[in-house]
Length: 247
Image 1 (tube, rainbow, N blue to C red):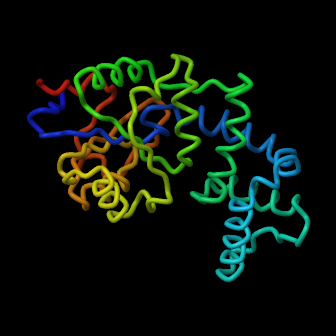
Image 2 (cartoon, rainbow, N blue to C red; image 1 turned 60 degrees about the vertical axis):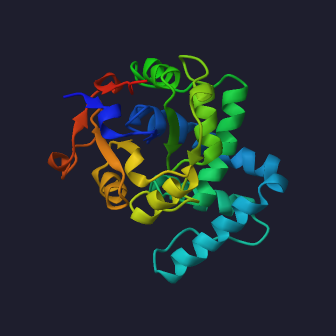
């Protein structure tokens, strides 16, 4: 069943990345593996430019200790111990702001030297261009840092798709499973929440967006995990199912 943007009164599409525009396997098997491999040397070579990330990681590790989670210890002046904690976070797929910022900077190196090329699902490039030509604005909300988002869409196997996007939001806006995050995004976009369509593969994120008043679609892609509350949402398997707004 197609989703008609005009009938729904949509003025902005807000997209998740992992499992929505981009295969989960690319994120976990390529990006995470690259960051894991490069992290130790990157910390040693670029520590002077990572003061904010290192502070956030130290603070997060201290909070984990207080919560009895037994994270790896961080020793003063020992960058490798911060690296050990960052790897511990990667293993847990933690949506850590400090880690995501660090990963984004590591990936920037890989994208710029051509080692990394981002994967998107085949229907994504044409849909972004189609919506853009129709005058519809498109934004991104991902747990990856804004830098990581911008790099991914600027360096895809289909070319530079960032030219079709306007507005990037990460966990500095708030967690993706909390309604206030989506209220913050609607406010930043200067739109009523009901004028925003959020598309994600995770039902808890859709529940939060719905709670904020946004309209939603559940994206079902190859490799995605089944969602417990999938029946509560209209689903699509391709962006081709989203009809252009009438002009």
